[in-house]
Image (tube, rainbow, N blue to C red; front, side, top):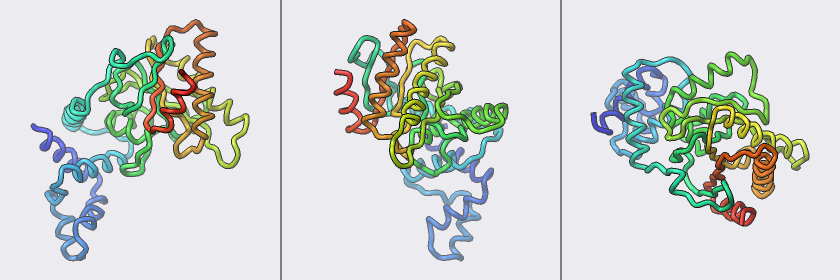
Length: 277
């Protein structure tokens, strides 16, 4: 199979599994009800544009509930995601420049980083973002890791029998990402004014991830900007807490783990750069 054939196979398989979404796709393709019905019954009426196909596939990944799926699907999905990753380009730790001892600052897509562990800013449900094509990091990580990740997180939550507390961390494999592990942590949600509890909870996220990474023999960890997106934690204060907590942890434990502060937005890059330089 080439990449186009893999993508089509995955789309058709997910539509067969979730037939309720065929009508939504048909509605996007045609405004007339009679034509919509014909399209909805036609498996081959997915978009022809590659970008639109990729958006559709991602959306179907996003809305899929955690459940088992065939080995054939997983094989083709893994081949597809690995090829997509190869085309995006893997970023090795050796490609980055240290900004301080054992500390790096890198701007880019965290799903490209080949390090021992990356950090996912999760929600309390822990099974990822279900909003189709949402741009949050939780959505990106679950999309490009593959459907295995959501199932693994669901199993953790089933054993836990309750929402994930703020400030703790859980670990899973990286699956189709180049990292070995993903650390999932729920940051504080800031509704209204920032307070001391928010700050301590955010610091706890960083400490918990560092501790869990070292328990699993990780030599490198990449942190995203926890809680600064839809959770509304102020970016500058969040960066201060991140840098301070990591440095305190390393001093207290004599940890030699290499830490990458991963940012995506330009303003976050400038904030971290000013703190670290």
